[in-house]
Length: 368
Image (cartoon, rainbow, N blue to C red; front, side, top):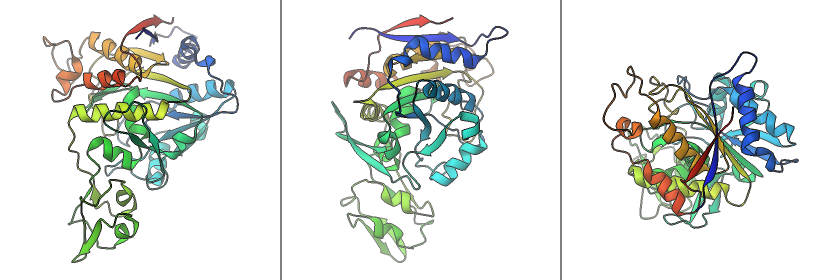
């Protein structure tokens, strides 16, 4: 496969030029104006940050992207899907409140916010995965699939399960509904925490496979009947039904790549990654550790695989910050493997390339 172009600009700003102006210049240099945005609904997929975490992208970055889309005639909205784990973003009302607390609103971003998989994370669309090897279809938040154009705006960082989090994780894991996230994290078989279960029976009414039964006022799931749709997780008001995070790093990375392909296939897509405050773990945590390397810059490309690879190379080439989880320099030149040695970030890009999502072979174009 031929090289993909990845465009880069650093974080230096001369007096009179802001970082947001540089981001706009980067987007234009990378070719965003090649997309026909005229009256098109444009999903800007990003992470609003778990409250307590301070390394997520500021709303200002989202506004710069939304303003560019509107200038080109598009109808942008910010979006993300609900989470599986118990936190402040597991259902749409809390998710929106968390986003508001972290500064995201129509006033600060210039566009509306839509939680793509609905109130309880059950509003999804089953989308075929062209060229899928592990999976044949993906459960994607409906609002993402209703959009005409998809733009990913990612905070590039480390990740405790995937090794790193960039464009592919932002789209693949981020656009998966709660059922989709369960498929990526495990094999779609939730379990009931008997200590939390109230025996209300709501889950039994929503199970189309009759896989859930009540015994002694406690629910249990028959995995032989369970289809892994995740509806029970969404309808449980007590967070008593959980998924089992039993997949290894390679499995999660490959499934995420296939989910990303399901999202972007057949429509225009564009990808931006901001490599600053590179925390060792995901912004899903209610806290963030110190950055592991100095701030690097902003990247943009039509190819999410090339973009992620360029960001990885840039982080690995950067000096370690002593007072961070990386600590003092090691012989290894792989910062992500040093942070999370049980992960294998290579599997994500290798599989993405294998299924035709993009190429790891890139040409870096610097925008000044």
